Structures are given as C-alpha cells and as structure tokens.
Image 1 (cartoon, rainbow, N blue to C red):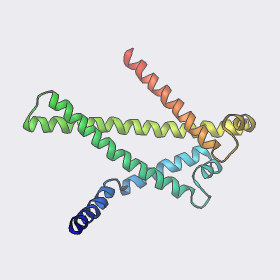
Image 2: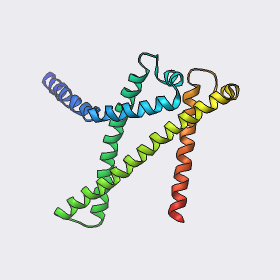
Image 3: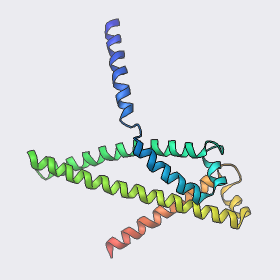
Image 4: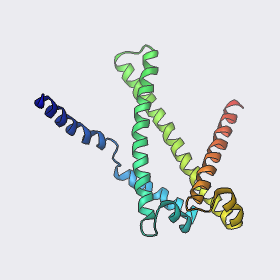
Length: 180
C-alpha cells in the first residue's frame, strides 16, 4: 500500500510541473503584455492605472505579469479548443489519413487566428474604455463617483463596464455587416 501511494505521489510530482509549464508565459507574451500595459496606462492616465494595479512602484509590473499570464493561459485554451473543434469538423466530413491531418491543421489555424483577432479587439475595447473613463472622470468627477462609486475600484468598474459595452456594440456591428 505504501509503495502504491509513493508511486502515485511521484507520478503526480512529475506530471504537475509539466502541466504548469504548458501555460507559463513565453517571452513574447511579456513583450505583448508590456506593449498593451503601456497603451492602457497612457489611455487611463497614470493615477487611474495605479489605482487598478497597485502602488506607483509596481503597478506597471503587476499589469505586465497579470496580462502575460492571462494571455498565455487563454492562448493555450484557445489552441486546444480550436484543434478539438477542427478535428470534429474534419471527422464529420469523413476525411482520413493525410487529408484529415491537413484539414485539422488548416481549420485549427484559422480558428486560432480568429480567436487572436477577437483578443486584439478586446484589448482595443479596454484601452478605448480607459480613455473614455479618464475623460468622464475629468469632465464630471461627482457624476463619475455617483455612477461608479468613490472607492479605489471605481475606475476599474468604469473600464470593465465600458469595455463590455464597446464589445457588445462591435459584435452587433459585425453581425449587422454580415447580414447586410
């Protein structure tokens, strides 16, 4: 019994790090996150940016770290979902062998590219929301406080809500363009 438990513990110890590495951010994730965080900081204003991510000393670093980790995990999940969906579609077409492999590869790449395009649009929505919230807060701080509150998370609430509204508008415009 002890040997069985020891074997299970050792195999779990070997599998856990490899599973964790699958979603560790790559250097390119940090570069992309740094670029996004700079744009976001500029759009939100430094004071608002600091309220969302931490103190003056570590706000930018926290933003980059959180964004890189989130993007790496999201990319891994999107790639897996794209491949799974593509495999189902190609299987439904009745393809076999080399044709099946090419079909899965082509469709998975297309699905991943579409997911990446949506991710970029969401980042743009969030940057635009930060700019809108900064302007709204500057224009009428009292109204901003009434709508979003006066606590530290008020600016974040504004950005989150406005980004969701921007995304909904963008999706409605895309659907309208497709049906037209």
